Image 1 (cartoon, helix red, strand yellow):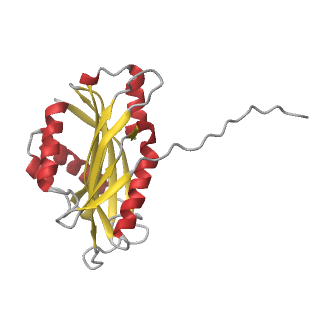
Image 2 (cartoon, rainbow, N blue to C red):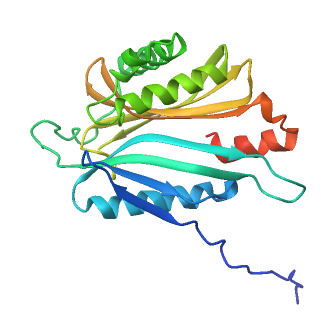
Image 3 (cartoon, rainbow, N blue to C red):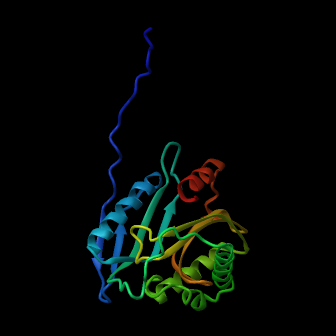
Length: 245
């Protein structure tokens, strides 16, 4: 029996934007990306991770501040753009005596989930109250990037976001994950939120478990689609698909 198959159009993958890495005076690096279509966020993020890992060679990679701006689509059929993408990072030597690997087969206890919930709530309670220096102190050494830059960035975001609430959407544990700054237990908390000045808001915070009840922030990303952009329902859905886990 013959079966008619639909024609398949094969297209080349969209080219990735230029990624530039510049060494800074304090020994860190600043990575910048030329403007790119928002729907390329996944492959661009993968390429960024590869370039930073290549720069660090055999050393561990510690990510710092991430900032970018977004442009709404300029017309039907035209994608939104990500502009001014900048992210700092450091390459550090890991001391195995300070950061022993998680035991084989490690599993979280019920108390671990409760401790993560407390750490997550405390971190954002500080940010929402404007206590940015105290929130920064929750980062593991070197993981927050430049202190002044991080606080300035959070202060700008605080002014934009208004009042609201967050809801955790997922908790994923990862003992000794590949690509982590050092061995140990990590946990990634994804969340969404409802804020008075945002049509969409979501993000993810990653903690390192230094010990029972001791969780340190090693990464935090928040994505905001402000009311001021007057986004359509289609744009809101697109934003959530591209940024929210």
